[in-house]
Structure formats: C-alpha cells, structure tokens
Image (cartoon, rainbow, N blue to C red; front, side, top):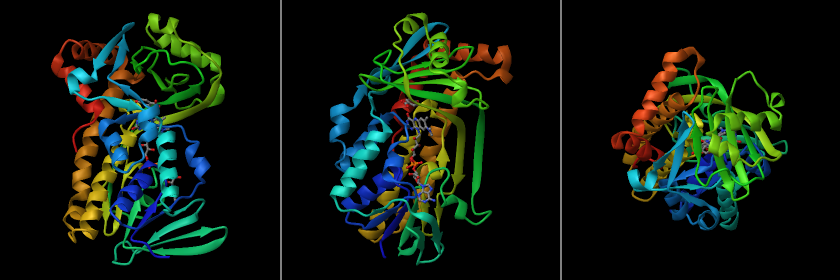
Amino acid sequence: MRTQVAIIGSGPSGLLLSLMLAKAGIDAIIVERKSRDYVLSRIRAGVLERGSVGFFDSVGVSDRLHAEGYVHEGFALSFNGHKHRVDLQKYAGKTVTVYGQTEITRDMMDARLERGLTTIYEADDVAIHDFDTANPSVTYKKDGVAHTINCDFIAGCDGFHGVCRESLPAGSYETFERIYPFGWLGILSRTPPVDHELIYANHQDGFALCSMRSANLSRYYVQCPLTDTVNDWSDNRFWDTLRARLPAETAESLITGPSIEKSIAPLRSFVAEPLRFGRLFMAGDAAHIVPPTGAKGLNLATGDVYYLSQALIGYYVDKSEKALDTYSNKALARIWKAERFSWYLTNLMHTFPENGAFGRKMQLAELGYVFSSDAAVTSIAENYVGLPY
Ligand code: RFL
Ligand code: PHB
C-alpha cells in the first residue's frame, strides 16, 4: 500500500488531520490499534474552544455540534462556600461549546466513512520505520496478516501511550513532566446538570467539578487519592463527597442517580520536544499532556493539527518546506502557554496536603484577587476560551 501521509491513531488528532488533508486533496490512511467502538467508548473531554469549533466547521463535521452542543458564555469558580462567575463573553469576547469528545469523534469517523477515506482498525504490532529517510513506512498486522504502508510522512497522533514516541532514538528528544499527587474520579449519570454552566470548586477536602453532556446527562469529578480504585467509590460515597465540596445552595439542588460510567484519571503535565523527527511529526497527546483542569487537552490537539495540516499543505500544494521546518516551534509556543494555564488552574483549585495551611491561604488570597481585578479575571477568561493561533 502507498499513501502520502500515514496517520497513527484515530483519536481527535488523527481524525481531524485526515479530514484537513483530504480537503486539500492529500491522501492519508489512518492506522488504529483499537476498534471503532472501543475508541468511541472512551469518555473524555467536554469543552471546545471557539478555535476548535472553527476547525470542525472548516472540514464540514459540525452540523450536530451546532445542533446539540451548548454554547457557554461563562463558568464559575467556587471557594469559601460561594460561586464566582467568570464571564467569558465580557472578559474575552468569546464563548466555548460543551460537546463531548465522544460525539465529535463519532462525527469525524462518520464523515471519513462517507468520504471513502481508509481507516485500518484493530491493527496489531504497529511499527514505524525509516522516518529519518525520504522513504518512511508503517507496518502492522491485521487478522494475523502482515502489511506495509509506504508513505512520504508519518503523523504520530497515537496518544500518550502510543508507539511513535517510543520509537524515537534515545537522546533525540527531551521530556518535561510534573505528576500531581492525586487523580480525578469521574462519573457520568442520567441526571439534569446541577447548573447551566460548569462549576470548578475549590474546597479544603479537595477539588470538584460539575460538568455536563446534555440536558439529562451530567459529568461530575472529585479529586481523589491516586491509590484509590473505582471499587472504593460507591455511587453514594461519590454523591456525598461532591455535595460536601460544593457551595450549599448548589449542593441542595444537586439531583443524583445511578452512575453509568465511573473512572479515575491521574493528573499529569508533560511535554516531549521537539515535535519533528525527519519525516515524523508528533501531534496531540502523543507529544503533550495537560491536567484536565483547564479543559485544554483536546483543544491543544486540534491546534497542533491545524499547524501540521498547514505545513503539509504547504509542502504538497505550494511546494514549500518552510512550514514543515517551523511546525515544531510554532506549535510548542502555544502548547507551553496552555501547559502554564492548566498547571496554574490545577494549583489554584486542588488540595495539596504538602503545601499546608499556608498554601491554602495563598489559594484563597489568589482567588479573592482574581475576582477583585478585571486584569486577573481577564487573564483566566482569555486562556480558557483559547489563545490565538
Ligand atoms: P487520543 O485521543 O489518545 O487518541 C490516540 C489514538 O491512538 C491510538 N493508538 C494507536 N494506534 C495505532 N498504533 C498504536 N501503537 C497506538 N497507540 C495508541 C489510540 O487507541 C487512540 O485511539 O489522542 P489525541 O487524538 O491526541 O486526542 C487527545 C485528547 O483525547 C485528549 O487531549 C483529551 O481527551 C483531554 N481531555 C480534555 N481535553 C479538552 O480539551 N477538554 C476537556 O474538557 C478535557 N477533559 C480530557 C478531559 C482527558 C481526560 N482523560 C481521561 C485523559 C477529561 C479527562 C477525564
Ligand atoms: C468534562 O466535561 O469532562 C470536562 C469539562 C471541563 C474540564 C474537564 C473535563 O476542565
């Protein structure tokens, strides 16, 4: 088999890249190690920046997003028993859209099917070769049979646990990492959301987040120890913990019900740089992770893909390698700003026992300052809606 760009991974990064390339007449094949249903069963991001929505618009996959997604003009930070609203429209002149990663992933998969674009699901033993030469290739096994794809470029869109970063020669890249001493326990329940906007709660016992997927589907998270498993958390324990961390007024209106999904995610900040290795280009979670507090992971992935698609279009259509050469630095400049914001909001909103009573006072002083200063709240708002490309 031969293609122009072999894309490893059928998450949001790989799917969006393939659609952007197809629109420019560039041929790409996606190789994914899991099944379509498995990819669609992962419950992840919920908040899309305006820029991400624009990318989905540009490749014609956003009809359902606009029909079923919720435009949010603000969100709240709660502390000391009270909710304080960050007015995104007022302070940043932009909104965000609440629409699940699962749904946009499905929309992109359906669009690729309709457009006759090739995805190889359930590919075993995926390996990348010769990306430091002009003739890279990808090998995999499907139903026990070995296959090779020859290509011009490889896009490493295979997430944090993918094969692409693993295949890089030792010493060819540098990593930067912070592992936080807690995780997020998340549940999905068929209950109306407690509020029409998201609430990020700072509480001495730990962080909590009230989010949603639709009018009758809620997504809630609480900070939990990394040593916990979902078996430690009955639904009742989860609801009691959440209620205790919310302002009284909000807690009283919380409608609870059986969880339909429950999982624990560790929190991590991570960057592997550079993003280019000859003819291999890394994008999305394969190259960087943010803690979910700033809702930036998926949005960073779409940003990388935008820069990368422009660079590949420059190569094929304008016969220029200039944007391929600048891809890594350009994407990393934006990535590091989102890393900073996600780290900042994580530090501001979670309980860090090792920081003691002084650390807690600093958080409350900072939160008090944010809501007394137009400059400070503007900074949060403009980062939350997404920095410019
Ligand atoms: P993905 O989605 O991990 O997709 C990578 C794909 O590559 C496949 N793969 C391989 N394929 C072939 N061969 C191999 N050897 C392979 N190894 C892996 C995988 O099966 C998979 O299908 O990465 P991508 O595309 O870069 O997308 C990144 C986003 O998924 C991620 O950043 C977000 O989900 C992060 N995130 C959030 N982002 C937001 O923007 N807003 C949010 O509100 C938000 N909330 C979240 C989140 C992530 C969470 N978790 C659990 C990680 C909330 C949570 C709880
Ligand atoms: C979610 O709805 O899953 C969600 C929303 C906002 C975040 C993280 C996750 O910051």
